[in-house]
Amino acid sequence: MKTAKIGVLFLVALMALTGVTAGYAMWSETININGTVTTGTVGIKWSYVTDSATDDEISGKETTSSVSASLSADENTLTVTILGAYPCITYSVPFDITSTGTVPVHFKNGFVITPAYLSGIITIAHNPDAAYNAETADITLAQLHTGDSWHGILTFHITNVLWDTVLVPNGWVQGNTAAPYSFTVSIMGHQYNEIPS
Image (cartoon, rainbow, N blue to C red; front, side, top):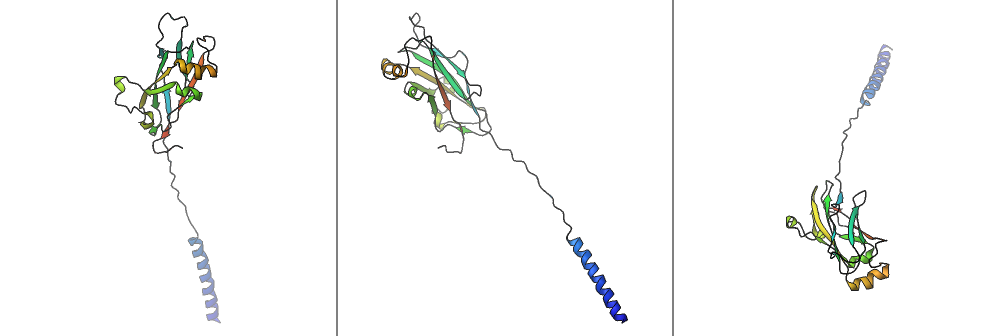
């Protein structure tokens, strides 16, 4: 009988010890590692010096023609305005495109001119200024890093044929100083390793 009591007591003690051990075994603690990933940014903007647009109109012409340009508030669109337009005048607008982001950008698709029918009249080329000769002349082959600029010049030249076949059918009136003609130019910059569609 005494042995049975000791056996029972031992069994109760063993069960208690097992419960306590299980309790200790179920204790746990989790530690976390928090990380922050900062991604780069793609940003470009136009730069245009006010009053730098010019035309080659001969002084004293009956109709005074002029050209000006302005930037949208976000500096993503260049708007060119021509007043008193007529054939055989060349209008020129120098500009810069600057990378403002942290990721290099390229311009695979080139410039977009709106309205589209003016794309046959407008040419956009690398500015021939000697200070910029080291740059890639073709914007679609250029890659700009933070703070880099591509220097361009937009030229709008109207021949008599283009005036009669393109502009007049689209509502242009020679020497119209009452209603200026405007068009916009935009370009999309892509991260350097992205292939745009």
